[in-house]
Image (cartoon, rainbow, N blue to C red; front, side, top):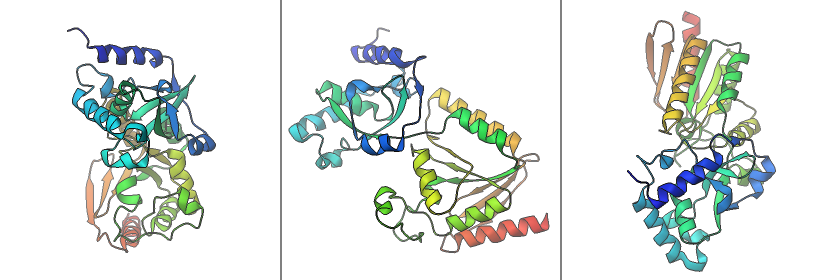
Amino acid sequence: MAKTKLQSFIADEVDKVKGICVPVHASRLERALVRKVNCNKLHPNPDDEFCFPEIGPNESIISNYEKDYRRAGSDRTSARMIGSGIAEPLDVQKIHPSGYMILNGHHRWIAAIRTGMSRLPVRIVNLTQEKEIRKMLELSKHDKRITLDLEEVVFVTGKDEKMEKSLSFPLNRIYLDRLRLGIPSLFAYLTGRGYDIWLYSSGYESVDYVRELLKLYHTHVTGIITGTARKAPKDVKTLKELEALMASKYSYTIHADKSLLLCVNSRTKEYREYPLSGDAAWSAEIIDIIGAMEKNA
């Protein structure tokens, strides 16, 4: 089947970076100052479904974004477009030798090019690389871990949920996410008991941002794995390989969410579930359960 004009354009753009560019970390200053980037400095992610002719791109989605851009007219880069989603920054990652790779926002990128836009709002994120995760596992001397979802568990998502005290100005304007009440205490307890702490994110949270925020609350984690929702074959394969590596590394794993603590023996596959109330006593409940488990062991 012959490629469409759009598919040919995307294939040409992919050829510019595939096998040539590698992700690199952007400095804190660059992440803070660079808010818009020229469209010609943005490159599609070869491993994203968008670049697979048999899956994407979706012409209907692109067309809707084009209509929004044209409707916005001369004001198309203003915050007033946020209702249609076109003012939301594209998540991008800095690459060597130059430019940025799109992590989220491919359809908006194409729509912007088609409507003659020269620049797009971006959010530069630093993701943990696979080689970094493998290195963390090699250096760790612990054989047990706990995993938590970053957005759903560590960060507060509801106004009625109890949260840690806000950071003072101007840090509270830089770090907008709030930690669930008890997270620093829980992480300190787990670290003291010889647990590695791994955070998982379905989105594209910048690893540096998360680590810096936790540091301000006097705590840290072993590793952060982002983009777990990505469905591209390479991403799925990599995630499975890392999970297999962790299963061989850790003899014991605890998965914690708002309402349940799941404790799994990686060797025997035996597991136990402990319900959690999910209220302000959430972290204290987990500490009590783990303390009882270790005492019985």
